[in-house]
Length: 594
Image 1: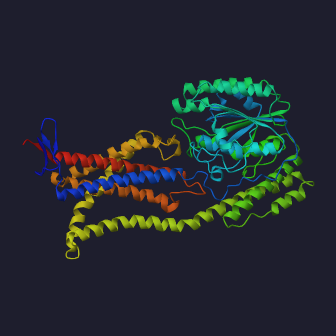
Image 2: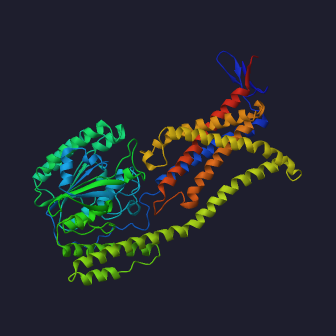
Image 3: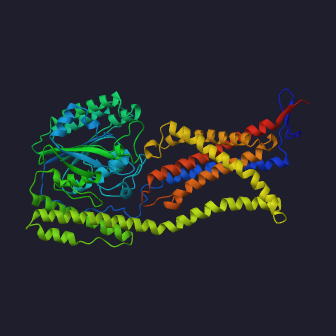
């Protein structure tokens, strides 16, 4: 038996039964095979570029690798001990599910705190350990596995003669372990009852009076949110259990000399994950109670970076050098002069940070006039001093933001030119190649004829691909949000969808234009190229505005997710091209006996 394609039989191989089989593609068909292979390679290349762009912002920030120690230290000791309890993934509504947490809420200075972007766990833990945003530390994902290059609160406390104990997931030590005096780490994946063991370890440490600062991290709620949804009965049960563990731990804490802060690393959407810009994912509860706190006051309107300087304020400690937050002094029942003095010290630390930041970006540092005014009025009118400090904080942040934006704008023209060049070079190159093959110099009409035949089919294929893909995408409840990317491989679910969409788009276009079977091969190749090019144009929007490799700033992450999804689709369309190519080869093959 022989396998014949269009009547040509070669490359025989002997089978055990003596039957010969062979396969050869006509010379004129080899171009089709090469073209399909090119589509596949384009898809693979797009996948590699997308992955590199996604993981590029990790500890590569050349601007803010500041490991030196902070020089500014709060003078007044407000509390003897501080306990920070981080309930992983706790939303604002979940914080009030249990009766015990509602009691704590009513007796605390409480409010809502905004977290940074991306709103993942590792980035949140880093913010709660350094007081620096994700863009400063370089920790923007949950698969970061190095020590951060900025000073941690644990190191600052250690320099202040204070001991810190951390109880929770191993990631805390992996990325922020410098300066920790004592640790207990275990992950939920290794022990679903880890919160019980964590609470027991913290309980014993408190009983033995081992540390000045305790950070206790409960993991189970986040796991339940991911697995069953944030509004599920499993999440509610987890929150109730965490409340019981919290009560057990705090039963041995002397609140007459201890201040407790309860908050979360991030929120959580109803179904799915977190990491994106959704309000429910980027806003978390915070309650502070115990020594020196205003009871039952809804006064906190802060940011996640404010927790670290608040801990330094309470324990009269140094402020980490890269801290970008402000101590939440309004939540404490202390004299205005104490608040004013603390804010001045905080402003001086922010000044140190801004000086380095703006210098690295070749920008002007913020004026210190408001700090000078705050110092001048400190002993005369503490309230006025506080106003001056608040004014400086606003000016400081605006100055840093303007410097950042100006630096990005200076880099943008090169990226824009590159995006335009890539976008234009592909169709120009394709038309030039086709023209050379057809002898366009002799007859431009030949090229026009081919383009008139192929372009409508290609356009319809691209439109149908997009329609099919996004119908499936939206029906899955997906959005252009980092909250749908829960791991390195989770986004790969969209690759087979893109393959199906490409195949569907090509088949629909071939049928709509009634393309003869003998011409399916080249029309299919052109259609896949068209689909990939349309996706590339969409991906180039990211390059045009932000680039695709980020060394010192976090881009628009929603646009980044769209870019990543477009590149995944290019990869999927390449796989679809492979299936289309194989199918066409088999359809043109026929088996004959010899």
